[in-house]
Length: 265
Image (tube, rainbow, N blue to C red):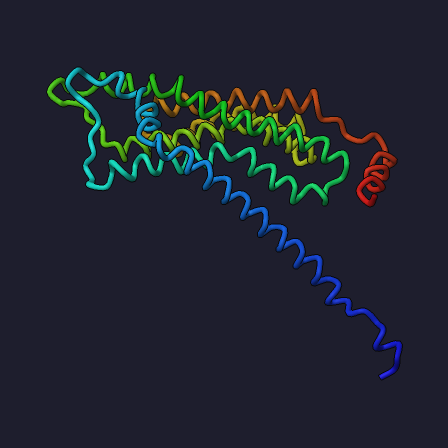
């Protein structure tokens, strides 16, 4: 074997090294995410029962006098607040989680993509929390007020704490995700997958789809389905408006070339 053959670099090894470094970085960021969730959980677990009491207020405030929530499972008094604290830890860690995701993918983005992505990430966090707040302060009082008033007079409303928690968490995530519709619509327009005119023409189909999704994501009652479907449609319209105002396609190839140069620096 000649000296030149010994000196030739191993292309497979060069390709494998970046992959390994990316996997190591991904592992480190995942560990940071788990650590912050664990720290938040430890900080809130002492107040787990108080957190559950606050979460159940929209229902307990409407219960008839002399009634209360119940635990039909022996372990429910412990695991229901435990589960709530864990979910809240994840929700509160969302900004940190997205920051770690951003730190992992940002080096591979063009400069114009970075300028667009940072506001979108911040807006997505705010909209998710807005969806959760909308569910708690607007939807829950209406739903529970309806449910507690339509039952037979000889039936006492005494909801199981685990069933209540599963119910409200499902609505929290449903409304949190639904409030991301403007971001999703804006991304479709920004990437060129859809146009403002095309999305406008699909309004009727979107409205029907909103009620179908509302039927699938919420309990089987018209009130909660409507309270989810109507915001979905309004947020869809907001996304179209934002796409019309904010998304501007590059006028020529020079802009793309400038982005390519900034990425290679």
